[in-house]
Image (cartoon, rainbow, N blue to C red; front, side):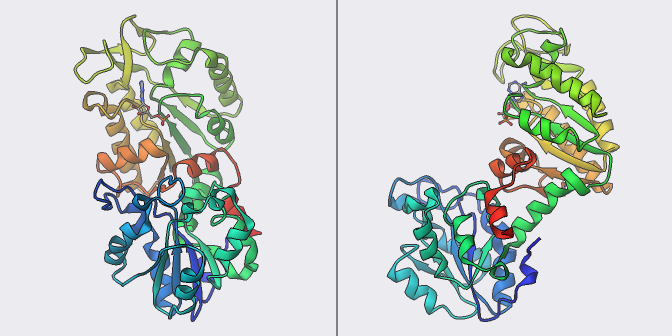
Length: 396
Ligand code: AMP
C-alpha cells in the first residue's frame, strides 16, 4: 500500500483530497465535525514534516455556485480542530487558487472552494483535473467517502502525478486495512452481521463475503424474506416477495461454503409501525397477521451475543431493528454491546454503512469498537468486492 510514510513532504505542497462534506445548520454552522477530525492526522503529519497542505473537498450537492454550499463556512471549524490558521481560495481553480498555492509556505494550510461548484468535478473531466493537479507537488487521497466515485479530484487527477508523488492519507489507509482484515487477513472465526431493511440492497455483499467468513448473522427487516422463504408466517412484516428464491439460494450457498447462518428465533412484534404500538414477543416464524416484526427478541439477543463472543473478527452493517424508535432499539443496543465486549476481549470489529454508524454513535459504542468506517457507499462497494476507482488510481 502506498502510505503517507513512503513520501518525504519537506518543502513540498501536498494537494489533499479530503471529505469535508459535513452537515451544516441553517446558520451555516458545522453540526458534526467527525470528518474534519478524521482528516487531522494526515494534515498534521505533512505540516510537521515541513510540507504545506492544500485541501480540496466537495460540500453537498450544489447546482453551480451556491453560497450555502461554500466551504468558507467550515474554515473556522477546521482552524479550531487543527489549531492553525487557514487561507481560503474562493475558487478551486483559476488565478486566485494558483497564486494562493504558489505562495504557500511550509507549515501553511490552504482550503479551496467547493469542487462541485464546477460540473467538471463529477464528470471526472481531464482538463479540470489537470488544473487542480498543477496546484500541488504531491497528491494525497484521504477521502474514503468518495473513493467509489471516479470524479476529477478523486480519480482523474492521480494520472498527473508520478507513482512516487501520490499516496493514500492516513484515514484512507486505515479504511483499506480494516476492510482487508474482514476479507483476507483477519483472525478466524470471522463473523458478519447484516441487518437493515432490505435483502436486495445487501445481496452483492452476501455473495462476495460468503467465501470469506465463518458466521453470518442476519437481522432487521431482511430477516422476514428468509423466514417466509423457509415457510414461516411473518404477518405484516417487511418482505420482498420477489427475493424468496434468492434467500433460499443464499442459505444453500452458505451451506456449501460451510458458513453458519444465524437467523433470529424470536421477535418483537407490533400492531402498527409506531413507538406507541402494542408490542409482544413471538417466535420468528409465527407472527399473526396484523402484526409486524420490528426488532429481534431476547432469546435472539443471547444467541447472537454467544456467536459474537466466539468471533475474533467482526463486521457489522445494518441495524437489527427499527432502532430509531426507542421500543425497537433493544436488539441493536444488545448487539452493539456484544460487539463492544468482544472488542474489549481482543477481537477486531469494523462497523460500517450509514445506519449502523448512526446507531453506534447514538448508543455510545463509537469508541468501543475497533473501527467505525467514514464511508457508507465506499464501504459497501468494497465489501461487494469492487475495486474503488479512487484507490486504483493511487496504485497505478
Ligand atoms: P439499511 O439502510 O438497508 O441498512 O436499513 C436501515 C433501516 O432498516 C433502518 O432505518 C431501520 O429502521 C430499518 N429496519 C431495521 N429493522 C427493521 C424491521 N424489522 N422492519 C422494518 N425496518 C427495519
